[in-house]
Image (tube, rainbow, N blue to C red; front, side):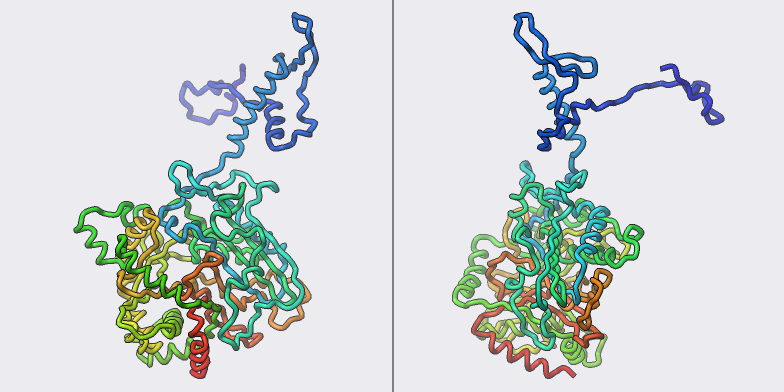
Length: 576
């Protein structure tokens, strides 16, 4: 090709720079390649399938044969079909090769690996599902990792995320379902009451039939997105269920996605709204050790800076057999508890008693202490040591993810760190007051919520994930009670106000949340009397006069519920 660009040369060029072409080339995809792509996508009936240049000729033996001429090349139609299929397969590979992100080892812990996380929200007023879906489309276009499909790597047996290279109607970025339900929302509960239905019983209003129950439902699906959102619009309120695999996110990670979604919903211009970038991969790859140390002296250092235990067969039997026996002998009943901010504030003032320096406790300390106090009502006095274990989140504390400001990149994965508080024997623990439990908990948090503690705990958790054993937080001879809080996700303070349908007539229909709960259980999971979940914190609504508060998933022995409800009523008298 005799072409020169010498007239467009910049000044001060080397002598060899004369503008003539040093390379000429090009690429053209054969039309039949595109036709075959359509065929492979199930469009056999398309008229595009007709081969160009098709005609019938006679072979030397006189028999008829069909040939095609494409781009000046003539050959048998059957051979063109083979070539076309090969070209289409190659082109399809380059056209739609997904991005693979390996899920970190920490996210493979049992039972986290098998669970689906759900954020259950009740917004005051009727929301427009179209506005919610529009914002979700914008969010997933910015954060394509949310469009992932999850699969098991056949070589490593670990989980991978497969991010599609393109999104279409046949390959959606997420599953969004909505419905209209007549009548008032059954979950706009009276906030004057403390005890409400179990979260398992209310799940149907926050999910669709297509919403996965466990991870296997996603793994068995064909090209199924990990993100499932269900919207159920009642006359006076809207139920929202936001679901992701626990192997992809902890509840604080899920909260990052919900908060960004709501920010876009309320934006005047979604496209111009700034949201943080997402960290893909494993930000903790250099935090802690990837392998559990074999040297006894290194193991001793680990054990001194973590409450996690690697049980052998005897420790496993010693810890789990009494627990299983107690659950077998006692029927469990779970309820959703609402602990109003007015009660939390009253107990917090009583605990601090004017000494902010040495007796300061958080709201979460008070709520965890209330639930622990109530659970102790289930147990008879005994000399068995009792430990309260609790989950801290490492966001904003450890070096790889600190500081965690509003504009810093976000990471969805599990950043959990187990800690423990010894409460003495069961007999002595039953004598403790709520303020005493809260103070002891705060002291324990202060000593263990450090980067060093979290680094060593991360090392042990990786080994637990590798072994696929249950995380053990207490010595095998202890009785354990677990506290998990999701209030730090900050979901309950959000408002969906910009998505309200026009013509609202119900008082207080402002899009704020009257309920902010969550779900991370198997549908028929037992053992809920040994763990409580502080699901979320809602704000006081000045328009309706409704108090804000903490929503909690709390289980106890059926025989103890009458006493528990009596204690809750007595606590209400503390509210000034």
